[in-house]
Image 1 (tube, rainbow, N blue to C red):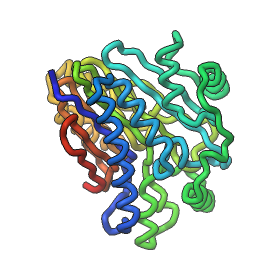
Image 2 (cartoon, rainbow, N blue to C red; image 1 turned 90 degrees about the vertical axis):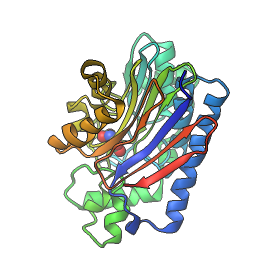
Image 3 (tube, rainbow, N blue to C red; image 1 turned 135 degrees about the horizontal axis):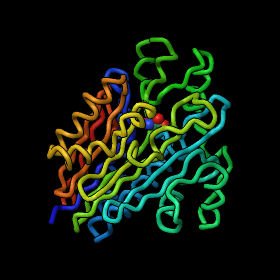
Length: 320
Ligand code: ASP
């Protein structure tokens, strides 16, 4: 049996050491470490991979540093629309919600869909009604507000009016670059885990891309694109969602292993460094296989990420 392990991400993008100040670096590092420790604890106490990834993503949603739950980015209309998914590799059960505007923790709604519904994906008001019936917490849109995201949205509105991705902001702003480009970063969050029984699970949650059109849904809640788990691999992605949908990126990591016999590392590398790049897809993913191997490739300057094996110190990285 493998040693239980959890990996998380807090988004990819133009995240460079040059643009990061020491205080922010410490904030991100501490947040990632705390979340990893919580996930590690779930696994150490014999919890399932599904429980570990749900808890990790719930905590990342509550952390305003990341673009999910509190801290989510704004749509073109200045509103919030959140997406999340969770998948259990052992059973292939999955649950997802898209375009929700009033749920404190979209990942808990996704988990409720997985457990208590015959369906896989709920959208908008229907998703909120389902979550409410399951006893989940509703919030007013002000709950998601952070000044940083609001400023970022205003810069995007003043620019081309195109949708922008999340973590590129600070880097380019620091270089005095065009403030529009300054907001190209992907702050989605996710977790993958392999538990002590060798079962795998993945969860992903996001506010999407800054200044996106109302009603736009990215890869995050699309099973096989931004989130996937089976008996071979569990994958959570972050990046330009449209390209992850078009390459069926998360599923492809597992599929190449199953059909072509690739290792986790090689399969994840081909998806991120070749297949996504071929259609100008930017971002990265985190993946774990049933032997507890972990792969964290990204084709951007950085990706907030970390790994914690049960019984070992946690490891966090930001840059390439
Ligand atoms: N993949 C997300 C989306 O397209 C964005 C992100 O990763 O930050 O909605």
